[in-house]
Length: 346
Image (cartoon, rainbow, N blue to C red; front, side, top):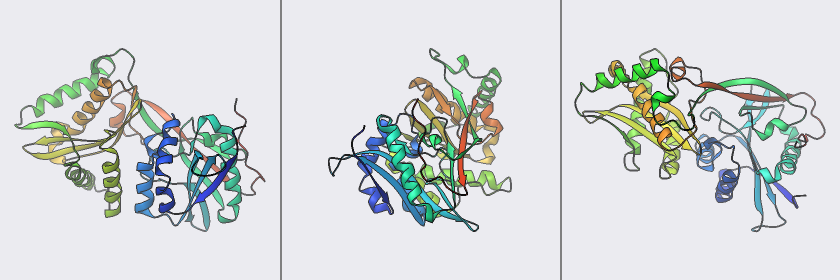
């Protein structure tokens, strides 16, 4: 037995800020967790987008604070969809992977506590829908729920052990594209790729929003970076994670101007390609290809095992030779079981 477990439902950002340190410690213990479960990612999301019904389930081990240990955190919310009240994971829209954090040493009992708490909220929701779950998600142990897989695909480029250069694992055609792009841009003067510092992060983020919108507007579409709240969210994330070299903003400069910006996240064994934008007037020089190449080169040099291109099956991602990592969606609607207990650990 893991000792006494107590649960509490946190309903506002102040309560979450009060456990930020414990949240970070729990994230460190959950080795399969992604950066999208970090408090430095989800807390800004909650602060900026202000979900109407926040229902974060926290599970502690121990009888009394401050000696208790946080062993699980399920960041849930309830939102209306038509006439239905949907129970979902917080962070949707901007997060490519969603999940709960559950300490592996207390997995079965902590999950039971979470699922029991979800049942206690039964009068508040009609449909439970947990999306963007990785294959290792602890929530996939839930009884009485239907697993829909695949929900989406995230192309992932594996970096084989022992390789030392891009030509060891990148398709030959893409290597030619990269070489041609570098030859073309070498004809310009004062060109370089740099990474944002704390002092220049605002400039890079502004350029990313502007370039991304310009690129999509040229195709008659709005893109995904619209609105002051979204910029505020990313600015908070960048300020929280850039100093630790986790969030990285790569910029391609030409004559002092940023003509391309790439937003990446380096975490544990993975480099995540999150978003990019470039000036369509410089499309001939393939700024996107050159920035992605720099990210892959940095991942290789730092011993990362993979580059995750995240959600979406855009053709340019597959030119690098990735395979699909499939996510799942978990749903439940109708009469609920009296107790949603997890499957026993194998």
